[in-house]
Image 1 (spheres, one colour):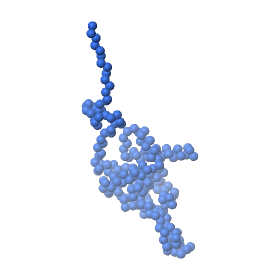
Image 2: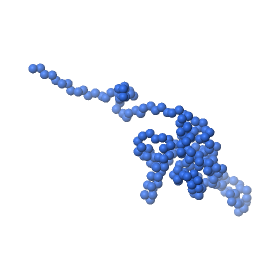
Image 3: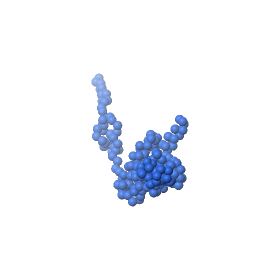
Image 4: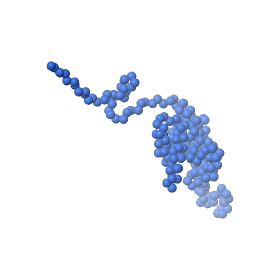
Length: 215
């Protein structure tokens, strides 16, 4: 009696990935990581509108407004402790929020730092009074509100988006980037722009507690 032999299943290379309709996407599958889908950005005016109300940029603007016509800085280019505490209290910012807002205000030029200048002085040795400098002395570095102070209210969409890019760049250069990246990774999904500020604060707080624990 004749018998039939069942053919063994053939081994083939997986074909292109398909979408819900069975259509191939992204060409042939090379076995590498999946290609991310194309993302269509919102119109520039819509992106700028979101940036105008981003807490981080608004806090930076408020810090620059508080500084106003000028405040003396330390040799490290930061506000003196008393001024920093007064500003943070007035603006209802915790230290980490104030620090972030200061960095962004400087990066976006809402706040400008003016180096002290060596000058001949207006008084002879031993005759200069408070705030006046004798020969060879250097005036304090100062911070004052810049000409981009009202950028969020009156700047063009391109200007506002450029400021947002500058703010994001300076925050990504922060030492606590690892903590912020971890916080964003933990979320496991899209994060709104205004939530980046909260992620930064959480990361900064984690870093401070770690430093205290190792000290």
